[in-house]
Image (cartoon, rainbow, N blue to C red; front, side, top):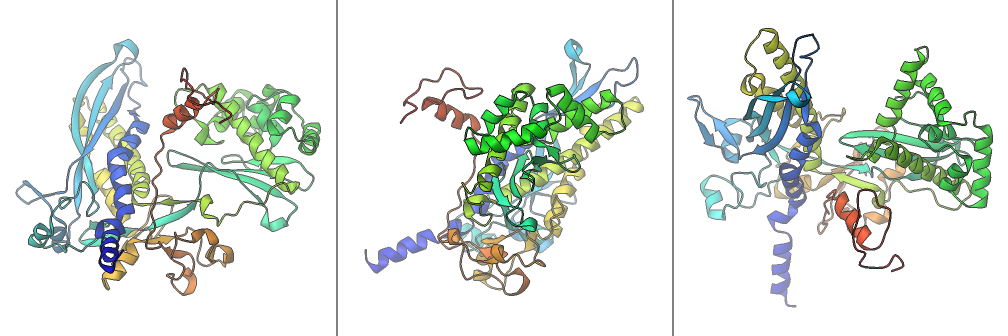
Length: 521
């Protein structure tokens, strides 16, 4: 290969499309799939109309959402196409209108009827420069120069109130994965298995730890302190000693540890276990409320990622019990030196949140805020005996404000700050560096020596030398030049079908798939 060929390959490889490609792909995926997923999760907006006698219940059903390309509304009320350069010069936001199909439904059961159904504008969404919905997507260099754009500009950022803002890619521990380690406060005496259970934007830390006296305890959100492991798995439906031990491990030494735990257990049946849990989560309340609260807590807050649409509650609970048993096994294996503690700094245990994931979190909270406002407007209109119509109950500035303000200030949902930053326009390399920057959620005021160090698994992924000096050293990193970021697509059914076709049996929700290979292959 001669020098010219190498130059050609290099030019192609480091073209403007590639340098910010991870931002484009993530944001385009959010526009094409993510927004609709969030709307489908929400599904309906319930109201308090119908609580009184002789009053029909009312709810709102949400269906298709669509977004057009950026527009600007002029003083005379007309809407024109908006280009990025115009947004910069006029200090306005480069945003596109979002439309949603909404239906107001009265009555319930067979008496349900749609009062009003229409597609209405619910707000404006800031659009990434260069993404699919950007007005300059697909323009030639000559066309870009004609409208005042730089053909070499990589895009990948937003324009809010005339300022260019880039969303910082953030690094996080992989969700829904068991990580076993020693509790740093107590050295090697206490083994911990933890998992960040994540579903629909809600993230719950579930910890299973083996205390100094060998007993297993589990802690999870909304329950103060920790709960005995055997009590919790019995509350989830694993009652017999034999089944609990078998589900943890058949290894004789681990069985011995488990028998110690079973001897110390003070509940024997599922009912007793739920009663005991109820006393913990609602002490001082009536027995019925305690049982109801205990059931709610284990269904809602314990390992939420195991919930699946259309799966019976009992099956979900048994799956949760099996998962806890797997966590217990990880603790015991660590205690017996059968496994090394998991390395939190290993890149296999990390996941990156790019623009699309961050916008999905933002859109979810904005939609919830809009839903609360629609509920309030509906109830107010009903109280005044007004005609209920979609266009009058939707105030589009509610969603717009919730989407634009965090990008303008960098204060994101979940209490994070500095998520969006002003694009560094010192020079062209500064822009590219900023678009390919990566930050860790760890506090910069703490030492975190291991997290700041170069890790062997960063080879080829993270640049070993580009990091700031001072408190951010090693916490703010940059992608390597030839780094490719793979995109996670949650096609769970596709994966299940693939496994079933390879001969794996007993996969929930998949039946009648002809195996293409034996289970031994």
